[in-house]
Length: 427
Image (cartoon, rainbow, N blue to C red; front, top):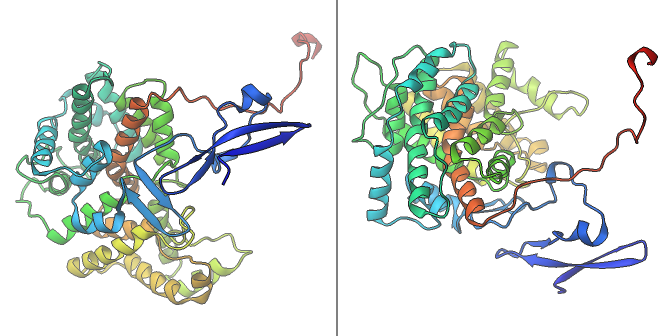
């Protein structure tokens, strides 16, 4: 195989190197394209454009493969906990017992949030969307941590990482409790990372909090499954913002804002809104299955199929079991969740969906779990951000350590050509 690609235009030939990834992915290196040819490429949505070389996550949508640092998502979800996976994504290797213990201790030591942040939380009305709140709070952290991170210092980099991993869950819990009219809580340093998140969110002021192991296991798995997903919209946003050398907290807030969109992190919220709409219309699942199959009907079955995974979403297989366990253990009688279970069963057996590989995806099952836990629909994407946090950090760290240049996409101008200014009285 040639290690170069040749572009021929207007009688001239230009050679560009071909890069081969460790999983045999091929890419044409066009860094010198404009210099050599005077041309650029057009690729709306960057679906065919690689913005970086990364060693963090490998994704093969056709084969349904997802790996973090070489470890399969199936094995990590079964054998690791979220904090181990966070360490793996950020630092490249699974931690030993000493490293993991220190990592957790250092995170707990940074879990206190300046009391002035409470004033910012209190300033938001209960009606404020939680994603807007968490994006604002994350950005506000820069005011209380004004010094920029010295990326040439591993110590400074590490301190910034444990600081945000310590404070972000507190901000998530405060956002949740503010919406539900509960007093703000700092949790318990004696608990594990994810266990403490659950306590900070759900502890009632007049009773002792007891951890449900099935709920803990489900949330731990959900956070692992959402921890990274290659160069998606929010991750690319974090990297391009960070390429200007803006700080970690500010970069993360841009990722949160990008994640908010219904085409990205808001997908699990869209699933529940669809289910609520079906329920409001009488709960006839067969009617909506027929609508989904009618190409002339604008209705779309949310949470089925995936933009990247063309066969099945490997994360969905893992979290389906956890969703079944949560629903079975909590014994919730909820018409919304009952509709979800019926749709899942019908879609898995319906030849139309089977032929098109429109299987339930991770957003479908995560929405069911969050609903069962009593998390409001508009908090779903905040929980997604909680899981994606270590992935964003890892991507930001990699980008800065690699010394990547500032992001600056080009364009092809399609507007008016040069024309003279006309005074207002003559227009």
